Length: 242
Figure (cartoon, one colour):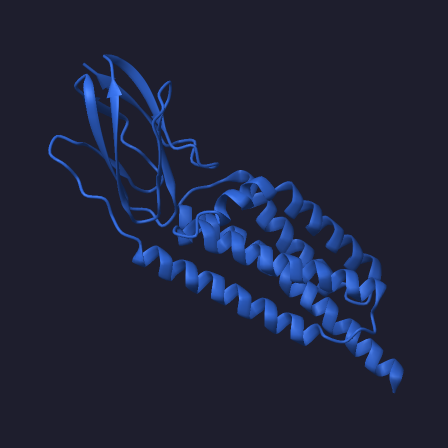
């Protein structure tokens, strides 16, 4: 009887690991859909986590598979920590925040489950951990959506240069007159962007589906403007100041 209970406990931990790691992969792949863009590192890690989850489920009786998957998943999270921190520090952009936050919660739950199934297989609590992780993921995702929707917009002013960010693209060219220039940026995407004019102090955060405005004193010349969010490298253009 005790052996049966122990085996059931191990299976629960490993099922939680499999679901958690696969959930990380699905969350990462959702980033590609939300961004409407192919971001190779995100695609690679998304597929990798789905495969890790499948491997744990496929060879659920093999403790070394569970341990190896947990270690690889942990290394993956640590390696992407700078990008994760960048995303979760912008809760007002749910398309950036929610996938990263959910992937961290599910990843940590899956990693913990894998380690427990290897080192303390008889430990109880897999169901409680699963429920807590799921509840936290939902709260973070829903909370981010609520904060994003309630965030206010800036107002455009007469003479502003209008900049549209749509489908993870900026206009190729902008024009302005030298002196004090106002830029009004409209973000139609579900993820955050930045508006950066290189060789100047202009760097503006533009949350998902929001409008932001900034002013800058510019002399005549040509400037490159970009979004410096990782994966948004195609968002660039040339500003001509006359």
